[in-house]
Image (cartoon, rainbow, N blue to C red):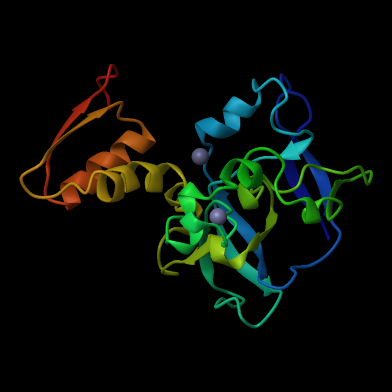
Length: 223
Ligand SMILES: [Zn+2]
Ligand SMILES: [Zn+2]
């Protein structure tokens, strides 16, 4: 299938919308998602100055949310029409993954930042048939469609504004996860958050929800 995507071709280039080609539908355990909206994370912007550590040309974008179009096998737990938020890729087999902590996956950097799954190479090309880097953070969602492992997708309430939910899959789980999982903050704790951007505000919300006293510090008064 052919669709539009924002392709980054060089480390100092702008993102340019082009036609890209997906040569095969979802494989076992994967889903095809029509993207409704995608956040722009600092990590996407950092690649543009990464001096070659992330392979290009590539379709970035890793805070995608959308609607499931097709599933590659019946065991994905998802079906066409489901609204999903996408998150990072993980191996599912290392000690961290098996211990329920996929953010600490042994292969996190390789799978998400520095090349993705080699078996995905050649499935995704530009309009002229030239290879694009295998999917970024398991999704490459600066695009109209993305194929992702089903375990990277979380079904959400279909009454919520789907186009706004993508950042839950990166910036918001980072801020909230630090407070809830790493710190275990709760009533009686005081949490200071330095920097009240998307990640910091997620930490503020999570700490508030957990019953902690919160102080947010930022140089920008409007935050
Ligand atoms: Zn991110
Ligand atoms: Zn792992």
